[in-house]
Amino acid sequence: MDGHLSNDADSGREEKLLGPADALRFFGKEELKTTVILLYAALAIILWKYIPSLPLPSATTAGVGQIEISSYARAVGRGAELLAADEPIPLPLFLTGELKCFAALVLMGLIPMAIVKWGFREKLADYGLRFGNRYTLRSILIFTPLMLALGYWGTGASYAFVYPFNPLAIRAPVSLFRLHLLVYAVTYYVGWEFMFRGFLLKGLEPKFGLFAAILVQALAAALLHIGHPLSETLGSLGGSIFWGCLALRTKSLLPGWVQHAALGLALDAAIFARLTGAF
Image (cartoon, rainbow, N blue to C red):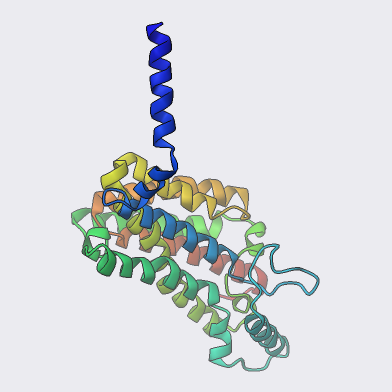
């Protein structure tokens, strides 16, 4: 009987915790920061995922895989025509193709930074925007060459269906392709590292604990790779755990940014080299 009463009591407590009034706890003082971080991260990740990196086929509806942005599609189409005709492509037109990279900087970098600084009233340095400690340079020197090698020689032809994010870059002259790599490094990877290893990891650590926060940001990063080659999606889970641990060890986003960017830039360079014979 005692056990039965205990179960009933437990059941009652569970029902009370799940009551409608308890929804307000998400926005209470103790939970507000966690709620803002997780809700904004989910929103930003969803929006970024559906921002196009290629124009939608004419027979495809916008809801299938990306948002339909007609001005982007027209610009990329015009840029592709110029490149096919070996005519110079205006720089603003080429940079329009970097839409997904610029969106990453805004959605995953600048807006979360603003939330931290003006919403939470916390220091960006505490979220990894600093040089870090004595392990920072050491880790960059050790792991960056490995990432360059993995990106250039460790990926297959299937990656060309996803990268580069700028669809004009793969057909562009070498000079414009190098510009793409620069934009890619300082927009996409800055935004990505701040979102996952800064905003999510450092923001959730006080509430969730060290290891749970590492795994939450790794899970989010891995889910964002769905639709990419399986090897990349699986690798993103291990890489996110590694760079999460590294961010905590060095107290900086710099090593993860350098290494992750080295991996991605080497991958784009490998695709470009295989398809064009240049670079």
